[in-house]
Image (cartoon, rainbow, N blue to C red):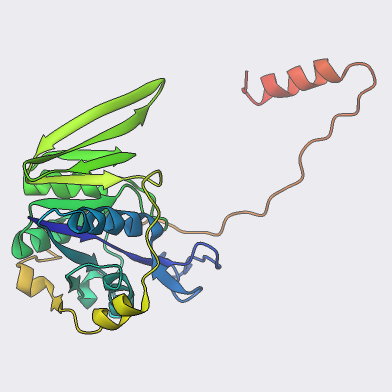
Length: 257
């Protein structure tokens, strides 16, 4: 079985986050670039299955700038067998439509039985790319799984819902995405770090994948971008025996009740 895991380089969530007000893009130099933790959980699920006796080859796949190679090397130390890096200047500021097209094309190029992703990246938080990739690949998808079991013939999992959980299953090939309720990613040991330096890492371009980023223009258009306005002080209510009425009037005025 070949398991392909989507991983992503993102600005550190504990660092500063800024938008470039000229381009509308995230300023990725504002803080340290790290592996998105949710994709680390996806890697952990794949590697744990391979280590448990499942005959699986685990490959990483990312789409990102040249700097993402360092992230891939660090992630390979968790136990994956190899990695693929889609890097092309024409992908700068790619929207989700183009991103899903490229990732699906890369998955076809590499070959897979199971594709595992995080349910939503910490920088974009859209939560729809895994489903878009599955749709382009024409395979079933199980999204936002809190639990995941992998077998040679298929995958099963559980997704939280209001008042309970859904039990889901799908035959292979399939795409799944996992949530932060999955086990934490492991910290690579010295042996894993050293072996990661020798593992294969292949670079792919849009030409390799046969994707034309201009074929469906405009995919999306940003009309404007601005900084979040500063937070203002809240309205204070002085209790002179009528605080309850004042609060009710305020909530009604703001259409909160």
